[in-house]
Image 1 (cartoon, helix red, strand yellow):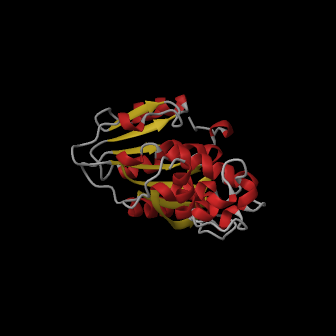
Image 2: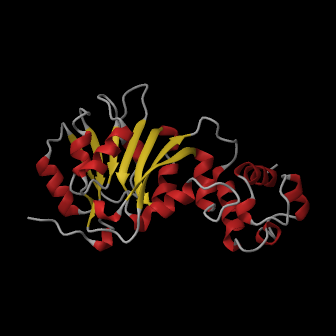
Image 3: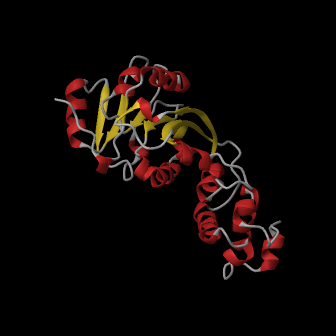
Amino acid sequence: MKHVARKRFGQNFLTDDNVLNNIIDAIEPRRGEAMVEIGPGLAAMTALLLKSLDHMHVVELDRDLVTRLEKAYPRERLTVHSGDALKFDFGSIPVPEGQKLRVVGNLPYNISSPLLFHLAEFAHLVEDQHFMLQKEVVERMVAEPGTKAYSRLSVMLQWRYDMAMLFIVPPTAFDPPPRVESAIVRMVPTSRQLPCDGKRLEAVVAKAFSQRRKVIRNCVAGMFTEAQLVEAGIDPSLRPEAVTLEQYVALANLAVS
């Protein structure tokens, strides 16, 4: 029986063989690796990954698809975790000694940002992540200071990861086609993470971008004085999108010094 994509789960199934093969080439799965796929859907990417892997894990919310996956693959090849990726403990997946977890998936666009923040909590356990996301979201993830796309998402993810947009995927590659272009992003936990308390940095960045049309002095009023902004190397007349990651970290560290 054909599975009908469910809007409430944000389901758009990737069906273009060329795109699928390009994604697999970008991931370069290797035998013996620990890999988890978020939202395997109809297993188009799962099937290709398993050609190079002994075993993998998948996290799927749709119970009908969970049943399909469990019938299609033996447990020694595929472990299916039935549940919400937003609540899933990615640290629970067993990883061979000396290795880290690899994470892949065509992420539901309606929960992409919360899911990326959830995954960031496990960055220390991860080797890399390859995701299909809405192109606009990927552009925000990799945006540089001073651009319109630079945002809270940019700062918080760039603090934890080195990221690159690999290629763009048209709506015609999916069934049903989404209304937006998509893109593949590679995320590698950075080896140069700036020392800072993550929750404090998140609070500072959220406050700064809550009124991004105002200058940073006004955005963080009540949290920081103008003198503190200057001490962190920030021109108080700049807008939030012109402040660098390094400057936000300096400001967050100043708050607890």
